[in-house]
Structure formats: C-alpha cells, structure tokens
Length: 234
Image (cartoon, rainbow, N blue to C red; front, side):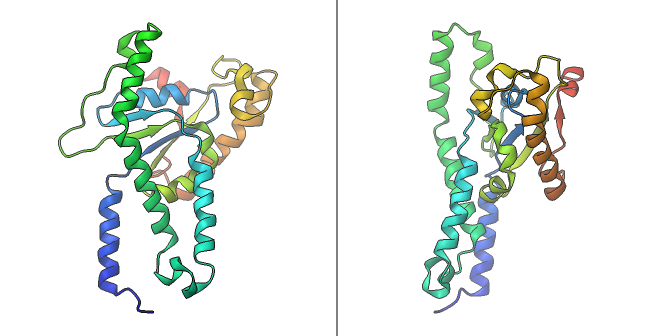
C-alpha cells in the first residue's frame, strides 16, 4: 500500500494545528459540591467565554474512542486505521473538533432556554443576561464545570489537545462550602457530614488534579483556584 508522502503529512499537521487553534475549551474541575459551578458561571461572563451545563459523558467517551482505535488498528495494514496511517491522536482530535463545533453551534438554543427559565422562575435577569459577541476574529470558547472530570483529564486532553484545565480547591471542613447532604447525587455515596465527605471524595479528585498538573505542567492544568483567593480578591 502506498504510504502518505512526507509533504502531505506536514500539510495535514499544519491543518490540524490551525483547527486546534480555535478548539480550546476550558474545564473547571475539583471536588463535587465545592463551587465549580459558580466558578464556571463567573468565567462565563467574559465576552469570549461560553458557560455550558455539566456534560459528564466526555470522560467515558474518550475511553471508548481509545478502545475503538485499538480495534481499528489491531491487524496492521489489514485494519483501516493503521493501513491509512491514521494515528490515535488524529482520531481523538477529529472527534473533539466535531463535539466542540456542535456545542458552539447550539449556543443560541441554550441561551433561549435560559432566558425562558429566568422568566418562569423569576430569577434576577442580570444573572443570566445574554453575553456579548466575541471580539472580531475570535470564536467563543466553551467552559465546562464538571467536577468528575478531575479523574479524566488525560482523556479530555486527547479529545481537545489545546484544552485548559482549572482545578478548584474547596474551603476547609466546617465552612459550609461542601453540601454533604447532596453528595450521594453526584458521587454515588452517602456522606454523614463534611468531615466524612472531604476525605472520601475531595482527596481523590484534588489528588488527581495535582497529578495532572505535575504531568502536563502549569500551562495546561493552570494553578489551583482556591476559594479563599476568590473571596479575598474577587
């Protein structure tokens, strides 16, 4: 089988780099019930950032893409992916671009629902006001505040090679930041109190973030955002 020429491969890499330059979602991660949602919403008030509801499915999706690639390249030149020199990072990035474009394409649908909900629930409109259009030549960047993605940072980076991750560190036990009564809804277990909830859930997610920062560096997993820092310097 004829192999891809070096020049053609360089062109393909350049094309991927251009596409990735507009595919830079931001993921706010950390312990559940610690404030990731409100931080996501605050970031979303920047004119070039678009806050979206928690997605939850991208971590498992990345795992399934990895499995699919192994199957599609298992027999060397008798398998389509390896025969066509399609690398795993190309496959991941292709799915990531499609997901990113699809979500940004439906931005107006989400805004319409949010406006309707604001009226129905009599919420102060300024909290859900429509954000201005991004500056000329720039596209909106999605901000996803799914705390469980603390455990899926590697998969997210494969889908979105230019993504940035913002870990959020919760308050200390007893401060009221962690709602232990609702932990079972987001983490699948019942916590009697904050002191019980933080070691069992918070340590796993925060530890995963710290390991990811060590692996990818501060330019990707960008310094932990601490609650105290937010309150001291809004």
